Amino acid sequence: MFESLSDRLSRTARGLAGKRLTETNIQDALREVRRSLLEADVALDVVSSFVASVQQRAIGEKVVSSLNAHDAFVKIVHRELIELMGVANDSLDLTAPAPVVVLVAGLQGSGKTTTVAKLARFLRERERKKVAVVSADVYRPAAIAQLRRLAEEVQARFIASTQSESPLDIVNRALTDARTQFDDVLIVDTAGRLSIDEEMMTEIASLHQALTPVETLFVVDAMTGQDAALTSKAFDEAIPLTGIVLTKADGDARGGAALSVRAVTGKPVKFLGTGEKSDGLEAFHPDRIASRILGMGDVLTLIEEVERKVDKKKTSRLAQKIKRGRKFDLEDFREQLGQMAQLGGMSNVLEKLPGGRMLPANAQGQVDDDELAQLAVMIDSMTVHERRFPDVINGSRKRRIALGSGSQVQDINRLLKQHKQMQKMMKRVTRRGGMEKMMRGVGQTQPTWRPQRRR
Image (cartoon, rainbow, N blue to C red; front, side, top):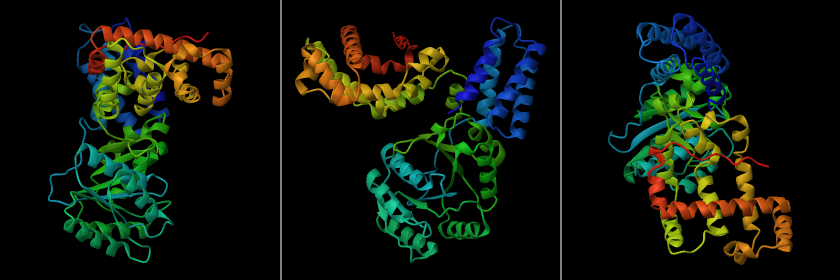
């Protein structure tokens, strides 16, 4: 997300390097900012207000003598981006008496039902809540069955419903059921339409009145740009929203929705949804998002992902193995590739590291998560003996492995070379204090890794 906007703003800021901030170069930079935001599909009113605020702050803050133009400009834009998106994360209000009711609404195709499951997993794993889900969508074929399957996947309690019931009867029964079963949170999935219409608004208003939810979330596709903000505003006029969930954020290179929604609706973006997997939901932190946009990274989110997704027991076992003098073999290499995939791939890690987006284009081009996946396939095509003792892999074995993994012998050679490099690195890391310290220090060091240039 924000790739296009981040690239444009970063280029604008670099153009001020080594200069003093003056009214002349401020105007030049602001023209680029305005163009960048419009190309990112940010609403025109929001762009005009944002640019005016940056200009006022730049001229009024007398930063000319204290900072160079680049640092001053980045600082001001960063602060204004945070203001635009909401200053701080607006988390769900879970302090109300149980069950806390969360009503989820959205148009068809926005990822609403998937978001319900992601939110259930988020609350269960990170907030330690007992979560129940129910579908009041009696119109879309298989909507109830879809939520049932997803609920099983995320280990949330599914309250059954049928298409022969009315949505109002379903939610009333579900609320009673959740109270009886002592659920902490009840998430209600509602019906969507291809567009906002009076029938949908009447139904959602009646459900809202019956449930009096603590949270009413509107799920909207981030890829629709400023239309996402306009749709959210129209919906908010029908019932009081408490927040927005932007889905498909990983497919949106522009980021216009994230920058427009709060300014247009007055409602906070609470979550970003990415991918189809049930763990693809992250809390929306305006300060962290602003840092990502300006190429400053998002180390806090990366640390949280490492804490949550990396298997510390396996990391500790690997460290102990190498300390005892045993070699880092291809099974260990395969495990590290799996851990990287759990973190969303190397591209996701780079996006959150300071300067990761500033790598040269040819270096970024070599960070290919598909190639990392192919490395895993090649290792999976080896025998257990070959994975544990890579030195036995001769020419005939390489040909067999290449055939079994749909690759070339040259690819196997490159894999073995990369493994040797990793083997040396792991030995150095362990000798210098342990892999555990390296993981704890993610947020305290600047990235030193650089993709190896392919020959």
